[in-house]
Length: 250
Picture 1 (cartoon, rainbow, N blue to C red):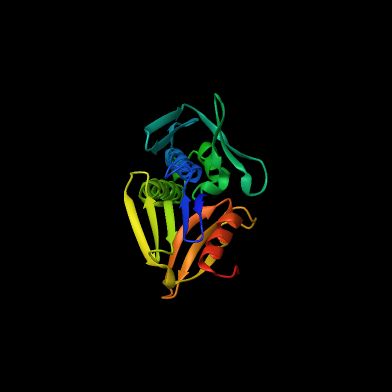
Picture 2: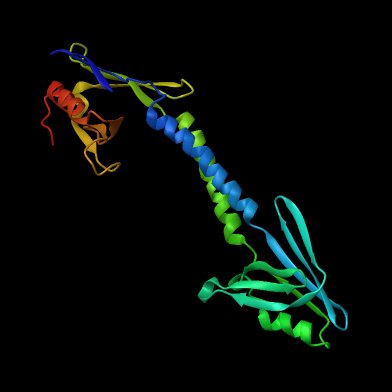
């Protein structure tokens, strides 16, 4: 925002870039990133089922089925030798030992209804013929993914609907202050207010801690406010408005 005219009777402000400000463009870039993160989480959230069966007295076969948004994938294990844990603590990995080598099927804590002993019992105990287990349902992953995608949609829509200050005029001759706001979709909004109704200029410091980019709003005597926006040249804009309105800086 820049001051294009400042006299004893008139003060004019004008945006340097219009609605396509750097902040607005950055917001639009954030939206697809959030959507992509949510989509990746959903794609990685799969339901995994393990079915093992003793088909011969000394041979056990298994099918590891993964199903998600991308469809279903079935991996066959022709001869199960047993199972083991790798790692330590809560990050222990559960491995199935097959004739072709070790197969990682996830963290042991993700399989609350199966453990190494159950798998080894099936392989070694000829009286047991079947074992079925399901990896804990990834409800948290689905919820996390959906929330990110909803947040992405909200940011995207809000970016097009939000209106930023394009120009503002304080005119002592007419006794009016007028402001023009415009969105990216070029939807325009005009606000007019009597200068006598403006109580003071307030600086909204909620956005940043450093003194570079503060939001400026006009506090009206009615208790309402008119938010003008956040400007890097905070001191220049604040001082100009305060001097023009005859309001002490606070």
